[in-house]
Length: 152
Image 1 (tube, helix red, strand yellow):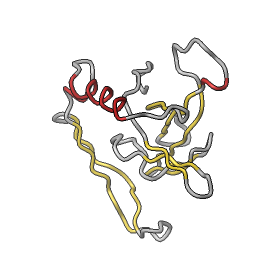
Image 2 (cartoon, one colour; image 1 turned 135 degrees about the horizontal axis):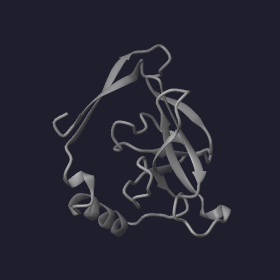
Image 3 (cartoon, rainbow, N blue to C red; image 1 turned 90 degrees about the vertical axis):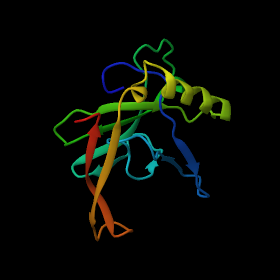
């Protein structure tokens, strides 16, 4: 939703519930501004995504919604590249709707075949840049990215 409008269910995340009942969002395929680690499904939690970029999940209404009850708020993934910049919303999802195989098929059909989907007309390649880090349990951290969008 970075360009002002909500484009529908164009992205899918996995929500994992651990034995302690904590819930985490796993998103392995959003692209350059996507999360680089599992996200706690906690409203307002913020974390360093990469380099100077922060990310968070908020619950809010989407532009165009007509029913404004608390149960209708959706989770929205947001990023900003520095503390002095505004948060940018990228996609929304609901934890209260379980997607079934047919739902994935319909969503993938649109994103993979519709002329209104940028995935059918745009080449997008992202390479995340790693460096050693003593703060990370893996010994590495993502500190930046290189992106190829079409031929740029």
